Image 1 (cartoon, rainbow, N blue to C red):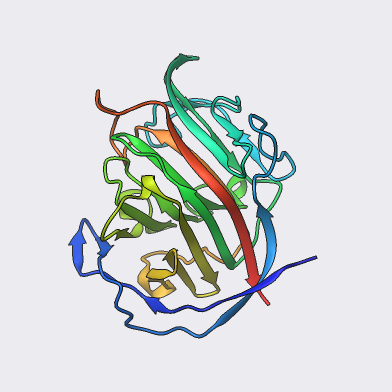
Image 2 (cartoon, rainbow, N blue to C red; image 1 turned 30 degrees about the vertical axis):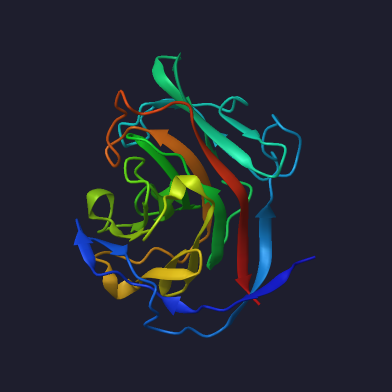
Length: 277
């Protein structure tokens, strides 16, 4: 049976500071009030279960290996409990470890719902406490289900949350598609006025419709992307699946330093997906 709930969209929070095509949300004064929206819960995982076990295999599968993943990343992704396991108290833990493993110097995990769940439009959200440190790259993101047919970036990519571990008070939301991908992605950031993302849980979400993608931190809408904002074709009208991972190194984040602490863990309290009621 589906659950329903209603969200009051209180405000769009925009920032006033530019850096490399990125806005940093730096105030909480509402500039636009949105109507009340009602949602129906379509899919969720609260990560309930015994400590040390793997996430639900009916909901998640794995990417495995150390191919660099198109970004010159350093980790080998595994499905070992040391890299991905339930906490026993309602969290999923993805842990990056500095260790020699199958030719790589680090291990971590990347889980996905590909082949198990995907959806077109709706609200995708997760409550997460992120890791920190130079070269640490946590992410919660979506890829088009048709990636095996049309390849990337034609399939589209929605990065609900990406963080550079050396910037622990800033999170980024981005989209990639034909005409806007890699370094030319459409992206904005949100910066906390106090505190850091690695010291507490925050809700990262997108609300996605036929002609918009809205990016949220907790209750704050800090970015809206529409078809007229992009250079290429709008490919965000097919089913997308979800991915959670912690990368080590790569073009986006740079590389670990001698001061980067290991192991580094991302804690996920829940993941939920809704559609309009």
